[in-house]
Image 1 (cartoon, helix red, strand yellow):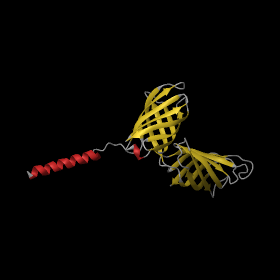
Image 2 (cartoon, rainbow, N blue to C red; image 1 turned 135 degrees about the horizontal axis):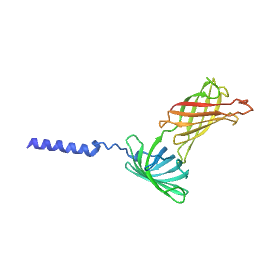
Image 3 (tube, one colour; image 1 turned 120 degrees about the horizontal axis):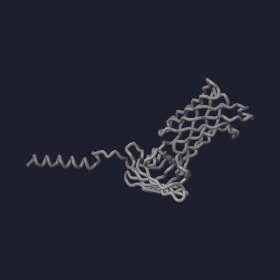
Image 4 (cartoon, rainbow, N blue to C red; image 1 turned 90 degrees about the vertical axis):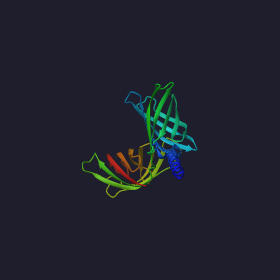
Length: 259
């Protein structure tokens, strides 16, 4: 009798562990938070055609709002407002644009990414279609950075900037503002600049300004999902007046960030 009671207890304990997630579903609850900056890829069925959505989502309870910018292989690029909801790991949102409505349903994966199916109801813009979509959250772009600039105008010219950048709070818009400063000891055109830029998905823009507000140039590139690096291009403007006195340069840039 004692042995039967012992075996019963073992079986009950095993069933209890299994019901608490011991099987491992490979999914993560979307209720952990969808608020943030997202980069999405939409691939149409039976084609290699890829569209992108980028922007910010805001989760409040089980409701999701925000704004996304549709780009890529589409004739209907533009901004759309987001309405949707979450239930466990399941996500359903609708992006409402002028001329079409994009419905995305899916689930959050264990690594925090999202995958699922989409459908577009087009009227009057574009064409009705279906496909698969994936999404990855981009971490906030804030912290100190080191940048290496390699000129394509002047052979062998490599210089460096260091600085700080801060991402503004998430307001559910398609982009968040960036601000900061950067300095250099070996740059050819200027040594100090303020940053006024933006980030949407992985797309980053630094507009570079002098202390007087004069445009010095621009850096535009792609951020890694962990916001640890930016790779892209830079161009310094040929401003005949100070502080650049006619200096002009362009090339490639790699920026490493530390939160």
